[in-house]
Image (cartoon, rainbow, N blue to C red; front, top):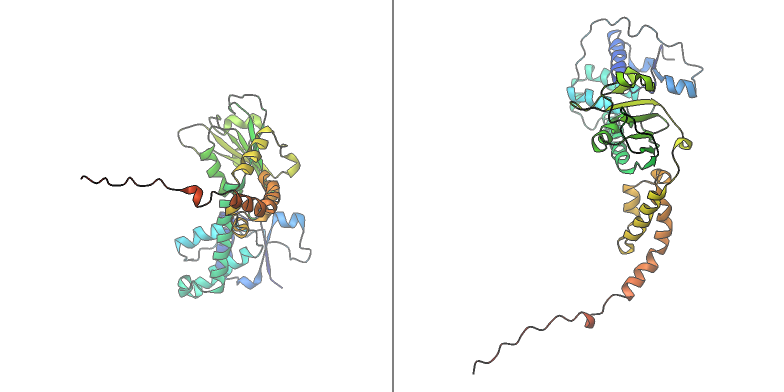
Length: 316
């Protein structure tokens, strides 16, 4: 059995904390196979009853012992921690350990551990992109507020597989900087306060300094986050959504339907939270008949006569 059990705070995505633990393990020369990595979130949901007592002094004593890794590897490791696979912590420490004993490993792109790490990173990046594409906001009436701006609060519900909520947030901050919005997920909830001058001004709203940032330099706006939510907390459909569904149905072109390509770009796991997906099955079922009707009503060759070129006249 492994001799050392480490419990990472929250969901384990705090890279600075993981890095500190990894440096401590290396300084103590504790090999990867003797370490069990757990997170507070997983322990709260499904505790490991057979795991040894967790280390409590891992960050209080940190002997100096050199660790060398490529700078790019650190950035990739931080992204890798956003993946939801529970074995990511062990794999990263194993790679860190091996790179100290196998300097050539950092250049071996076909190594099994390296390949797995890149696979997890790719999944994280892909889901960040899909979050940008598939989040759908619904307006909720809200009183104007000097710290919060005016107009409705736009609320979205999303269910990511990986821990990418914070990684996806900058896109929404830049794109909707003047709009009040919130994104609810099972992991955590984001709230954008477009007119807040600083984080301290939101203390009365229950926003804590450690759970907010002011990302836009030189202008107001605070992004705060809190506990996760449920689908029941999301607002119901509104009239604007009905208009969007009407538009979506009218721009559908049955002659260009490619179901496999559509499912590749819009995986089915996202469908239940997209309002337009309720139309996809009926549109697909009617596509063949609509295509046949389009061909039947297409103009024939004789109907598409081109104007005759003027004949050259005989000068004589």
